Image (cartoon, rainbow, N blue to C red; front, side, top):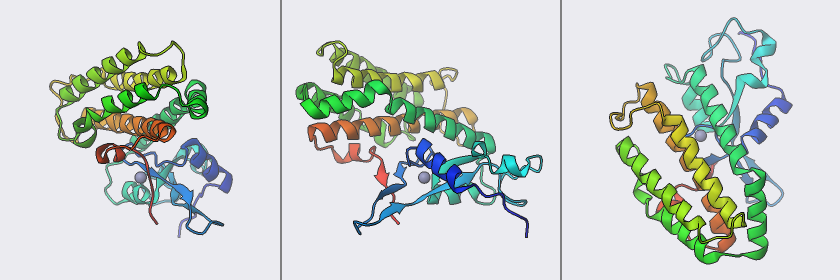
Length: 262
Ligand SMILES: [Zn+2]
């Protein structure tokens, strides 16, 4: 049996925290940590996955790596258990480059969601609960695009682009109803930035021509970028709805990250 270059406890813990305990697969919305029904215990359903396998014969094994490189944090990403199994399956199309991309996109999305402006704005909103009428309109604007959130794989990419363009204009319009730099204004700014990041990622593709094809790297990039966008917007919506006690429609609830079941 080949020796395994496993990650240390510290490396696993750091990977989990950098991912904010969410699975890094852009198509997966699972939160991998949470409370157990026993108040003394917590749930942990995440997995520090190897990009290049820990042992010879494993998925994406790279014989040029030293044992130190193999157990380095740069060779790992945080996934839920199900996604950990999927990417390691025999004949899985998940290349090392794709997994590195997932990790980079997920970590930058988490950084964006927890930027100082955004986190402080949420805290302020929490304490003052100002601007509820506009907050409702923001959620309303997102609800209006429920088809985009639900059935995006079936949509034509160009329609997705149009829909996001409309959404961005509507959010920009709502910002005029708010004082510059007010907490809710900061959150709207963060939402429009998230949409902007999506457009930057897909700008080199001709979206009028792009069609669903999992073997096409351009489609995959589009589909992963859209999934990252959904996840980022989902995190922001759940925060906003929490602050204002707004009940989300069933469609929007599917966007909000879910706690993994054991
Ligand atoms: Zn997952």
